[in-house]
Amino acid sequence: MRAQPDPSASEGHAQTGSLQFVLKARLLMRLYVNIDHVATVRQARRTDEPDPVRAAVLAELGGADGITVHLREDRRHVQDRDVRILMETARTGINLELAAASEVLALAEAWRPMQATLVPEKREEVTTEGGLALDTPDARRHVAAAADRLKAAGIRTSLFIDPDPEAVRASVQMGVDAVELHTGEYANTRGAERDAQLGRLRRAASLGRSLGLAVHAGHGLTYENVTPVAVVPEIEELNIGHSIISRAVLVGLERATREMAEILRRARA
Ligand code: PXP
Image 1: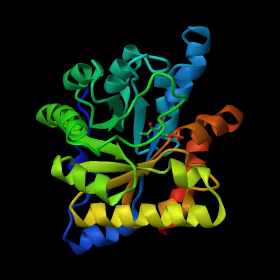
Image 2: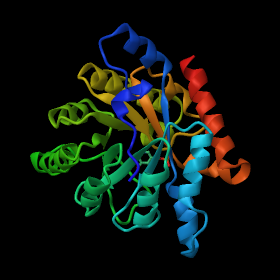
Image 3: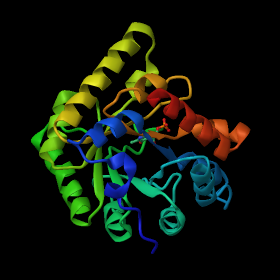
C-alpha cells in the first residue's frame, strides 16, 4: 500500500510556538475536497461511473491539499473499494470520515489513512446534520474509545464538533489532534444570525488553537460564503464537498477545485 504523507511534514501542520508557525498559520489553509458526491452519482445507477478515484486525481491537479471521503455504514455513496484504491493512488493525504461505532473503524485501522475524522451518523439523514454529541459521560466515552483506537493505529485523529466551548474542551480531554468545526449553521443562516454564527466559529477556533488543537472546519461552505471562514487565522483546513462537486458538473472538477483554492489563497493573502 502506498505510504500516506506524514502530516507533520506538511507545511500546513507547522509547529506551534515559532515565528514560522505564526507566519504560516496566517498564510496557509489546506483545502480538502470531499468527493462523496461523485460516488453519489455513480450509486444512482449502481454502475462504475463516475469514478471517485479519477475525481481525486482531478481535484489534486486543481490544487487540493487532500481528499476527504465519508465511508458511511450504509455505504450510500463511497464504497470500500474506493477508499482502498484511493489509499494506493492519491498523491495527497486521505481524510476518512467515519462513525465512532461502525465496523469502518476496523477498516480504518487496517488502511491507516493520513487522517480520520469521527462524525455522527444517522441512517435517515440526508447529510451529516450536526457535530458529535459530547454532552454526556457515556457519549464522551463512546467517542473517546473510537479515537483511542485510531490514535493507536497511528492515524491523525479529528472530531467533527459543533463550534461550542464545551465540545472543544471535551475534545481536548480526549487527546485528539484536531477538531473540525461544523459550519452548517453559519452556512444556513443570513444577516445578523450569520454574523453571530461566525462569531461562534471564531471563538471556538481561538479556544481550540489556544488549547493545542489543530482547527479544521467544514459543511455547507460554498464559493459565496467561504471567505469569512477562510480568514479566521486559527483555521488551517477546510473540508468542502457539495459546492465544489456541483460546480464541477458544469466546469469540470480540476477547474472547480482551482477556483476554490484561489478564493482560499486570496483570503489568506
Ligand atoms: N465535513 C464533514 C464532517 C462532513 O460530514 C461533510 C459532508 O459530508 C463535509 C465536511 C462537507 O460538507 P459539504 O458537502 O456541505 O461541503
